[in-house]
Amino acid sequence: MTENSLITEFLNYLKFERHFSPHTAKCYAADLTQFCAFLAGDKQRAQGGQSFAPATGALTSRAADSAHPAGPGTTGTAVLPQTDAQQKLRDVEPEQVKSFLAFLGTQSYSKSTIARKLATLRSFYKFCLRRGYVQAHPLASIRTPKQEKRLPKYLELEQITTLLSTPDDKTLLGARDRAMLEVLFSTGVRVSELVDLDFADVDFSGQTIRVRGKGKKQRTAPIGQTAIAAIRRYLELRRSDARSAAFDQNALFVNKHGQRLSTRSVRRKLDKYLAEAGLDPNISPHTLRHSFATHMLNNGADLRSVQELLGHQSLSTTQVYTHLTTPRLKAVYDDAHPRS
Image 1: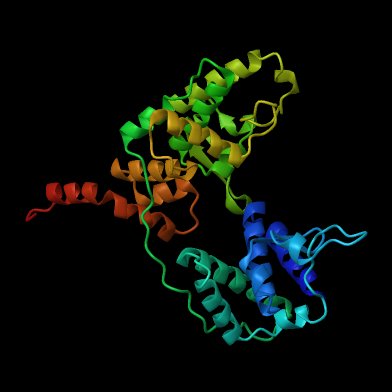
Image 2: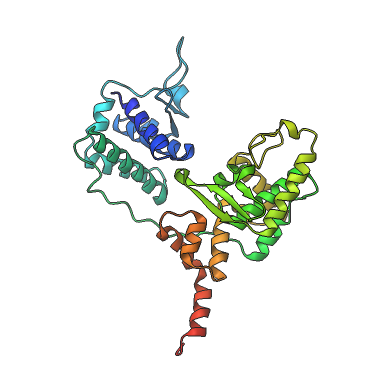
């Protein structure tokens, strides 16, 4: 088995057995190929951005063309050396992992990024151990570096109101954009879950949507009347468009060509409306998810309900929002405690 095919087998495991999203698998692949380049002593390639193409077992990088010039009959894709790469990957020692972490520390990576790369290696070697490709887990004695605790950014209600009223819902694309923003804040869905919505996922009478979350897990999320009305307005204009017959008939949100909208497009649209509304340009679609959770907790929702609404597997993931709701908790304390 070559080192590339070992990575490919791991990526296929993530995709078909763990049901990881393509984006997550791509991040795992980039982390692993960076580690492979480090083991091979190729610091230049380990420094650059790299991605692994599972279909071909090829490693590509921004420096691929200069580092590995394409000759006649080649594709110009840099491929990992096959001679001893597999053995190096399988014979990794804890000290090599520690050296890799030290190397990452010199490359201006944040602690959270380094922790993610370390998590990738943990998952990979856990997989290899189960399949019998290694005899011991090389990261068993290595601890994850302590990370900074960063509180999620969220929008105040006035900012939310300003943002959601910015798109012009008299036009098809404006109505679509307002509906998207309303759904993001009304339900707290991830942007990847938003663009994955189909017509059939919206229950207008029951005011719920069916969400396909991480790991292909489905959940039902309540959706507010304002968001439902925005979707209805968008669909009304969409159906009256002369090109509507050629649009994707399953996808709820489509681009101007009638194809399912991408997460990148949602981010571009949000950036446009942030500029128009004079709001912080660093706000992301995920900020609306944070805002949903924070406002729910501030208005009396319990933590486990919010956990389920967000589709969090662990309650500890949801607990980060409790740090943002301290003023409300203090007010409850002052009202309820006899010696406050």
